[in-house]
Length: 76
Image (cartoon, rainbow, N blue to C red; front, side):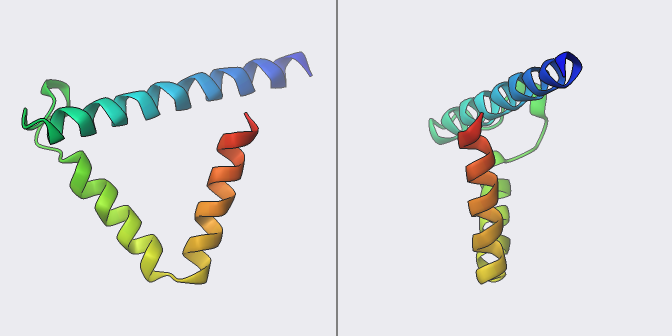
């Protein structure tokens, strides 16, 4: 079980870093600094909008997917 705990903590740490980088990229993009230097020509806001649009287009299945992801995130 110790190995599973370490893997879970490692995955949670990576998820935290990913969410922090995404939030930072969105803030920088909103402030008008365009794209972040290490991300190239990627627009985070358009990617997030695209993901949310595709989940919204799926209707009930998209809502269930968002609910599952949210509950997993809150459980950590």
